[in-house]
Image (cartoon, rainbow, N blue to C red; front, side):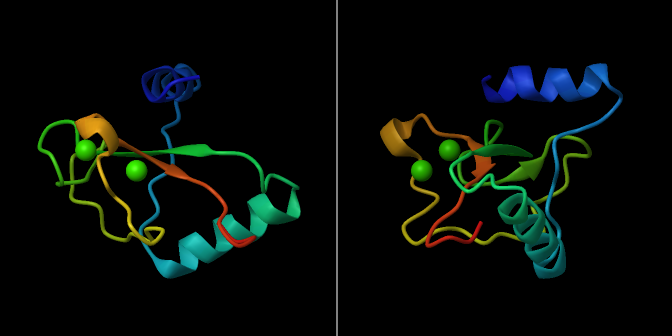
Length: 94
Ligand SMILES: [Ca+2]
Ligand SMILES: [Ca+2]
């Protein structure tokens, strides 16, 4: 599902897309998703720069993104049309 649908899906369960706020949270999530065999999957995060290009904000509380572990070359706003952040595995680590 797309990012908006994923955010709505979470809201329907009174939850939100995850926002990673530290290296410790990133590592914990990476460990969990890897151990559960999700290496080939993508996970939407609750962060976007839809409001202002290049300024990534939390969808839930509209605070600036506190932690980012971008893959080299990202974020690149591919096609000037890429605004929603996702988690994915690179070199077998998320
Ligand atoms: Ca990109
Ligand atoms: Ca963007």
